[in-house]
Image (cartoon, rainbow, N blue to C red; front, side, top):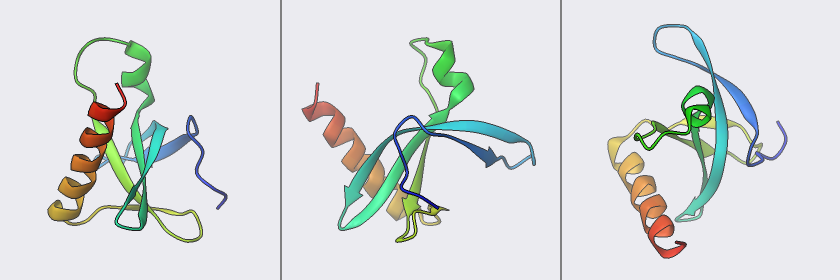
Length: 89
């Protein structure tokens, strides 16, 4: 797989087996590991002030996306994203 690009649209299989389009919104470096931040295209296109579901994926050396399995890892990535958003406004 090639390098993950911001704005790239990918298919994500949901828990119900349905495929949904996600858009890569950005990438983060957390303690030397690279993560992709994504949102559902359907929610992004709605352009409302409602909260949007955000997904984090760990990016491996080949550019493959992997779901985050541990709550601690998810929380750590979420804290870095929140910190970055506060300091980039």
